[in-house]
Length: 307
Image 1 (tube, rainbow, N blue to C red):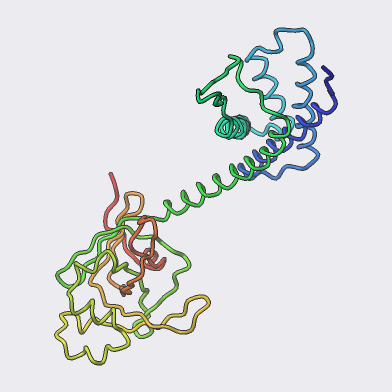
Image 2: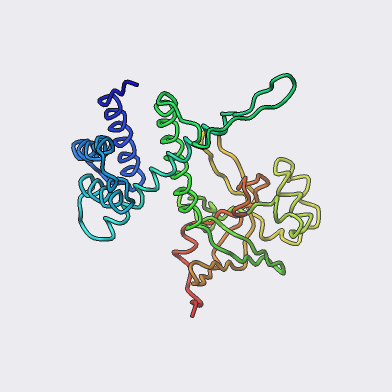
């Protein structure tokens, strides 16, 4: 059997380059192409060592030491934590990419065939070899998938960092839920200039007086509903707003008595808040049921802290 060592080396060089690039992207490190190329070249040399008749080259400790040199060559050594983070992320990128390729390969592969109505299976006991063509095609796919999943994890982590519990008091009603602190929410009451939070009425409608729900839900015919007894009539507001890609719209709101928000064990309390009543689900996955205004925390007072 003819082995084209140069082709095998070049393929491994490309794979090492992509894995190191993915590691740099995940860690958000600005690494030059020269260092990436040098690190990939050092990693690809290991393929040549495997053709030497030396059992020690297969030892896990030697492999680990070799990967340490690859990471230091590519990312440098600034401090121990910086180095360890790069090393573990390099292993993570390698294992998830290689494991994904193996998983897809065995998912698509079948060792069974039907002969004369009888299912026949065959196994060599050594596993099924993966073709180089399959590896070449799947490496970019797995790299793209890994990067997208890491990006989604980061977005979800950032979102959860901005999620906090709240307690809203309006008249004799207390509403408790989870709010998202959205810096893009700049909605204010045009009269009092108080910040406006958005409350998901698909969650809280059964806890709000029925007359309030009807007036808020039927804003276009609110004039016909004004004569209906409404315990929050003096609290009601009409708030104009403009969403991206749409014309000016209006939102029914009401003045709240107080709002308590907990962030990292710290309790913030404010009374200058207007609650916008939205009948559109604001979180498709149910992660939160209100959108908080950033000024609610900046203008609030700290009433208690976690011990």
